[in-house]
Image: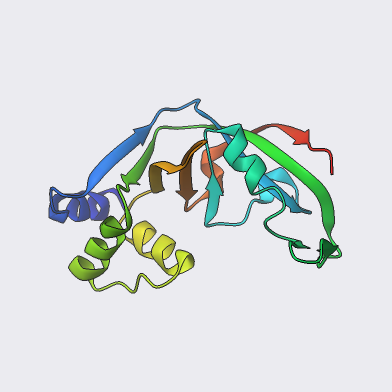
Length: 158
């Protein structure tokens, strides 16, 4: 596996930058879906900014137009705090053009976030890092939740 990653990295055009997220970095995942923290589905989206995670804490499970629960497994809005358990190699995304360039360079379909995540992971990255995707902070996609160690759950008032 390591040899394949080195080959891919050697072929990456210089326009693709790597962000190395240090081991021990605190990240947050906002959700209202019911699952054990060590069963975080991937790809998963986290942020080093609590406020970004809070924004997404009702992204799944609730219909924002009706405020009705669409999921029988809804546990209420909460933020799950993790720490990275190793250094992560993330594609540094400067904007939509980074995804367009990857799609053009490697022939990947970059039509939706799931396809984009799969393409980035197939290139050997742990995910991607968009530094200022939101006013409050970064948007980070991870391809494997085993790189996260659970810290605690922050319950949010509904």
